[in-house]
Structure formats: C-alpha cells, structure tokens
Image: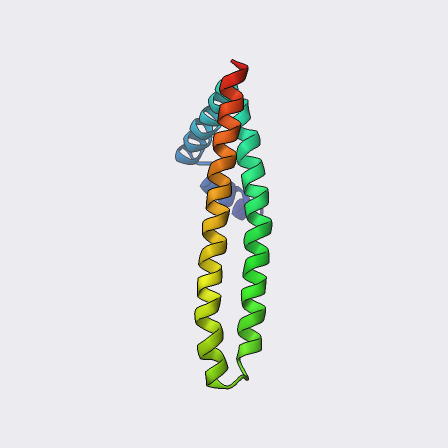
Length: 112
C-alpha cells in the first residue's frame, strides 16, 4: 500500500509538473507585483459572472423541464424567445464586464 502511494506521488510530483507549477507561480507573482488591481478586477468579474451564469443556467434548465410535457405549439413559441432573451442577457453581461474593466483601468491610470 505504501509503495502504491509513493508511486502516485512520484507521478504527480514529476519534474514537468513542478516546473509548470513554478512558472505559473512566478507569472502570478509578477502579475500581482506589477498590477494588483487586475487581481481584484478578475475576482469581481469571476464572482459576478459565476452568480449570473449559474442563475441563468438554472432558469434555462427549469424552463426546459417545464417544456417537456407541453404541446408543440408552446415549445415553438417559447424556445426562440428563450434563445433571443439568453443572447441579450449574455451580451449585456459582456458589455458590463468590458465597461467595468475600462472603469477600473481608468481609475488605476488616474492614480499613477
């Protein structure tokens, strides 16, 4: 049992994985040192995106389950409407993300 665990650890902690990890850590550290505001912006974007996208996914799933037993004419009305609304929501989220990023970068430039 012990040799199996050691073998798994050796497979995980091989030279390639260690080098990849060190390079990623260096890049992350360099990114933090050069512009710490980017980390805050990424965290805020991720958090907002996660809540919006998870909520959107759940609403779509609930609607699809609701549509399963409905007549075809209702499906033909609801599905295109759903696609259009989803597209608008995703575009709106993208615009807000871009505007938020520009606002943060403008504030960051003004501080320097």
